[in-house]
Image (cartoon, rainbow, N blue to C red; front, side, top):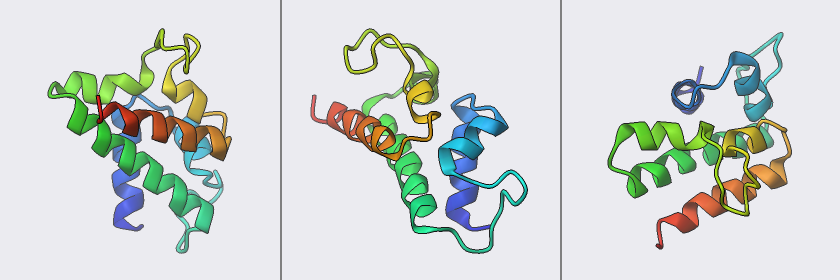
Length: 109
């Protein structure tokens, strides 16, 4: 298993993802969750997870906020009362990318 995949799975676990959610987020096959070679889309999804974690670590000092942000519903109109985790669990890559951009923009505040 690649280091990036291992790191992403560790982060997802800390975000309180279930195994099925982690598979959906990373587009991993339940029958072969640890492929020898990742597709371009899987690599992109890994990068989003790692970047979101990095951005949250830059925005928040408290580890509870760093890891809790993704599973908490937010009043922000962008999330419409849902948690970022709910949005990225849909599997929609465009939505995942938008969540990543939104969290990255928090660094500029």
